[in-house]
Length: 290
Ligand SMILES: [Fe+2]
Image (cartoon, rainbow, N blue to C red):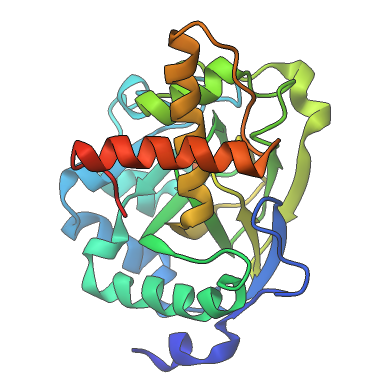
């Protein structure tokens, strides 16, 4: 493990303030890490399997665009080389996925989460599914409104960006149907940006040395400022995120049966029953992760 990652001060997270269901700012020392220069990331992009590299023209991609299929719809004549080495003028977006499959970058992912886990474990135990991702984007590029099936620790390496982050359990932002479809079918087809929800967002601006924790499945969209942006994120799940997913999946089953179940987080006892029911059913089918 490199000295940079080994150092306990690679990520600063205020354990006393941290709440797993609330976004919060972080600080870090990854901005000068030699693996996150454009040159090294181009080398990485070329050695990753093709299905782990997505790139496209970001000119017409906005917060309200659909994220699913965006790379296919906006690829045009862009090459991977151009998308990265001429990112300042090409208005491109590059997404490098599942970097935990690459030994060099996996060392950084495991090192960073190895520093974070002791800080969060007491409140939010059971970390699993540790992954890493890099996002490269041109000045002004926007990332469409979406949500992820993990909790995210996002570290800004170069440039600045603003993120609008929403509460995934606020029914005025995320309907019960959207939550149940997202968690059961793993699709964003009901996750659609509506301008009227923007006042509900918590907006964070991060620059090199700063980071942002986003709770499991929190909707968000991102706008770059006027420089090239490089961001590195590590993601994971925990018992709390699995519980939220299983509650919504159970709710979908109950709704199909004609009932009108409450969302997640309103009653710990009811949530636990729903969680155990889904876990038992998935265990029977050999599909539970625990
Ligand atoms: Fe995301």
